[in-house]
Length: 334
Image (cartoon, rainbow, N blue to C red; front, side, top):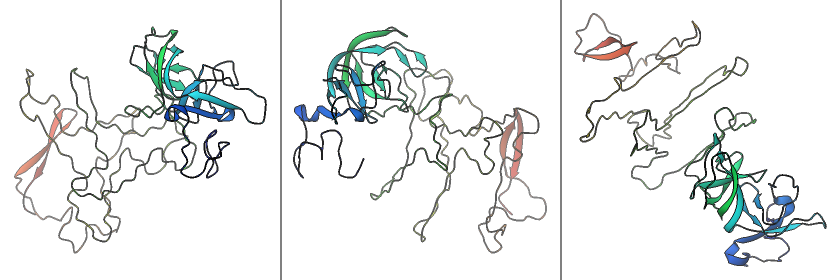
């Protein structure tokens, strides 16, 4: 869309508006009018927008048409309502299959077919409104729908298992955030907190990261990581406390469960699986000095230092390998 242009009748269209003019239509902009060519979804069997049918404009503008789109004339305008209660056909399915619709459920509209369901895959669907009635799982029925155009990203699904969102651009970044904290205090670039309440869980993960390839022709031939952490200090602007810090905490306060000990036996678990012999990862840790000076000859803060003679250990780190205990002996002197 060219700079300064607008959607449908909105600046600068046929309304002849000027800077600072109010451009909203009735009900504070609730009713909108757009070109038929700007409508991205149509109900099955129709290539033109039908009156009283749901519609999508662009990616996320939704509503119900007042008028039927006509193919006559150079421009074809369609007026629609972005808010209200309408009797509409709803399919009781979601992204995983049949799923009953109950009053209060969020409903989503397909961006191409205009089918309304509970499918929340944002690649193909966008939020349409809320159900004010019920539909049996797998069935299609006409119920009252509260149409509401507005963002809702509390729970977002992009693609799904077996059918991910596909991007064909080289070196594509699918989601990217850049923040700058100027208020001091304790800023968090990303804070994830998962509370388990009311019902017990089989397992729970606050963050899951996975890199996956499916055959030998599309493998990652070079560097590959499921997670990467970096700290960059420009011009000596700060000091590094911990590059990557894991705060391990057991129970905080008393629990009322019968057994109040940790169920798992390890703070950090490393599980290795291989589909065939010889394909296992060879090393648990690898440390590389990019300056090819390992260790730094004149640095008093080496990661490792040479030691002569046997030392008497004072402590030990315990590791479980296939449920067999091993210890790395440690001492406090070089």
